Length: 211
Image (tube, rainbow, N blue to C red; front, side):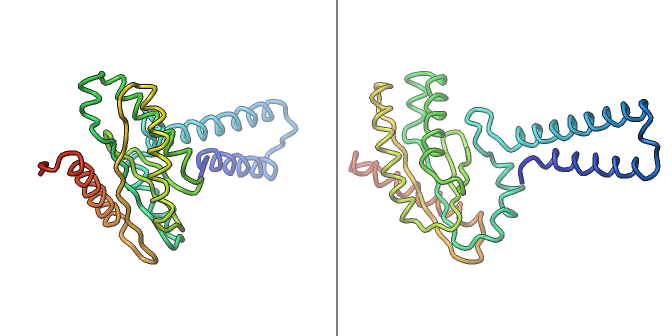
């Protein structure tokens, strides 16, 4: 639920107002001033709470959700969902990008990929900065066909920004799906394993002697 702090502050303000109407002479100018100040304070506290909560649940570089969001809020949000698809997205050869072009370029690549992931997924989906160069997509009420097609769309867009950077940028994806009751952590683990299998397959095609 968005703006929880503001909702709570509004409720408290209304409670104070109702109490004042019943028990206090609200026609007094001094009390009206105090009541206005009270409303402003409640609103300020509510806004500050929402801002703090958002910062705690968002990654500072990409503004995507982070692991705090996954552990604290996501299970409640997914409680009423049926089919669920989970996808791990990992940037290929990201260490070499940092080593060859600098961490500032690496950070920019992460932000560009984060933007692509958000723009290619639905509003109902959750896109998470899972680690340094890993992202997590959680898609309620969706099967893996959409995420398979998502892989192609993402890499096509990455081909365009690769031309801008002057070096190749691509990602590997692993998918896990489930219907009904599921353990979200187990699904993430399975998606992660599938992603690394995909990464090894790509590496083997490039280097048959790669182990």
